[in-house]
Image 1 (cartoon, protein in one colour):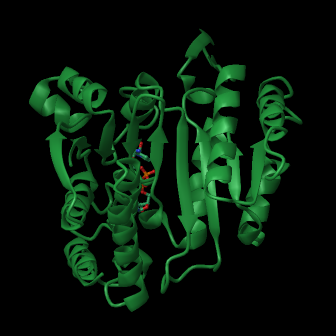
Image 2 (cartoon, rainbow, N blue to C red; image 1 turned 180 degrees about the horizontal axis):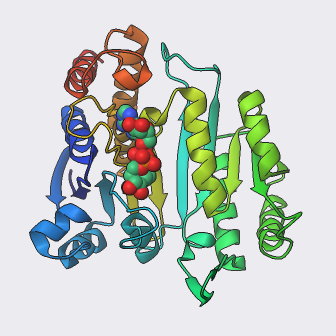
Image 3 (tube, helix red, strand yellow; image 1 turned 90 degrees about the vertical axis):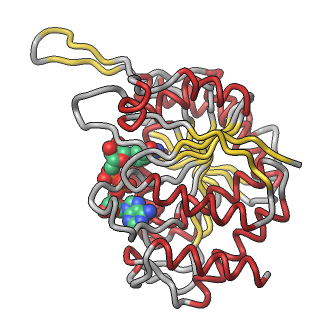
Length: 335
Ligand code: NAI
């Protein structure tokens, strides 16, 4: 079967890691017709707009995309296109598996946790305004509908993959109404999954627990902002952002992308670690029901780490993006 997938290379290290991922996906034998259309600064140069209509139409048609990171300016410039795409296609669930790789120097072993982050509301609703000069207001939107559906996603996922526990992370001791509503919705859903353990933890304590004993966690269920922050913290536990994949899932579509950003400090140097985008590609293959290819790609990546000869610079090795990619291709051939 031929699949058609929208490909958004992004900017910074995006095009380098996306092209590496495309190579290894193709090596699994799955045939993909890529519709490549960029967004962000690169799209502005070619199409005169940050988010071309052709890209929106392509995602609507294909309902699945592989995306590289897109740079967003800090405290100025256009609003994040990443957030805009997630909201536009109502990709309400962001999930990010955080798991150790062999031979990666890091503080903890046996980490295997999953961040499930609400992706459409909270402080990312983008509702900010100046009340009077010197005073701005940013609205935190929490709804029963979004909280319930992300909770259902987390518990369904736990049930499907036989995971043991869901831990809801909150600050309802202070934000009694907004985080309180989130928790109430999660509790109702949790009661419908009696076989899955459920607990709640305040976000600041969660941070401390994560850096003391991350192995205690299984699935972390969070609102948008806490989920964003805890994802990077989780990446740090296992060695860095180069390793953590992600998926944005909605009813009518899915966009697969790494947790990391465009890494301007190393862009164009050929040293970016493509693992996170490759692991996101394995999730994409599974989403396309190419289960065997997804498994093969993940095993090939793990094989390269187990061999330990082609580790990239961010994880203490010397391999370039290309050397790492070639090593994955050899592993795919040998599986
Ligand atoms: P970043 O994730 O781009 O980089 C943080 C640090 O991790 C840097 O030192 C970078 O070199 C390193 N790093 C990240 N990915 C790596 C990889 N694959 N291999 C080796 N090293 C890697 O985060 P930063 O610097 O905060 O953001 C840069 C830009 O990316 C910003 O404009 C931000 O808005 C954007 N961004 C975009 C995202 C997306 O498109 N989904 C997600 C996160 C940030």
